[in-house]
Amino acid sequence: MDNVTPLHAGIKAKYKRGKVDPFTLDDHTAYDPDDFYCRTTDGHGHSENVQIRVPPDVVGMLHHVVNSGAFIEYGNSIQNLIRNAIIHQLVRDANRTGNVDLQRKVSLEIQLTKVAARKRDIANNEQFVKEMEELLDEAATKKDWIALAGVIGDGEDTIELLRKPYQDKANQLLKIYRGKLKDGKE
Figure 1 (spheres, rainbow, N blue to C red):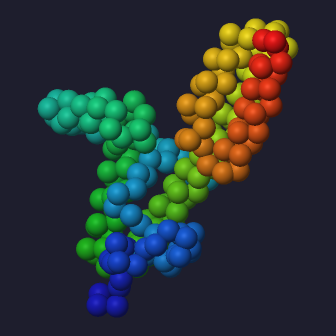
Figure 2: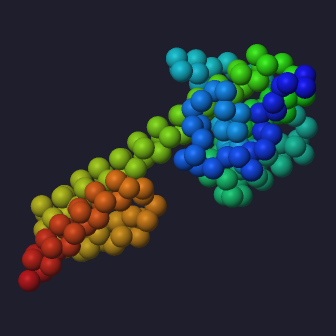
Figure 3: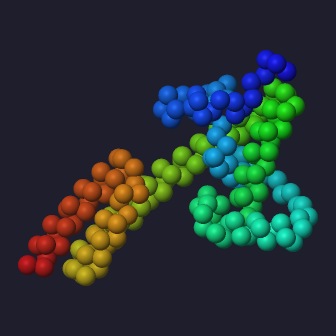
């Protein structure tokens, strides 16, 4: 057990984003107790339904946390909170037992969850730019200058939430349609 490295040992000291490959399964520093692990299916889309009984006051607390809005990762689902709690408890229990196979399995689940989150993040950024472009084009085509100004304003308010290169693409679109708005109003 002395040669088993806990999954979360030294995270704060060792883990520097961009310095450690978070996809390396032997890299135990990739686990972050502050991350959220809410994946609902495996790589094949499979899941299992688990039903448990929980005291009403605990369910009330779960709803309170989820409905607080403090954790967007949970959406409006206490199931996401529970899935996240299970993964964190599995990390602690795998470390306590010293079971290397269980530690590897938990590490793999964590990495798969991070991959799924990154895929969603990329898809969300792409979807925002695509939908913004469609709205801009529709308003400009219809010469609805009020709607176009509104979409441009919403884009400017939201653009800081995007990452590069999506932010750059959105800025290019806004520049083009600001010009169309200016030309159309003249």
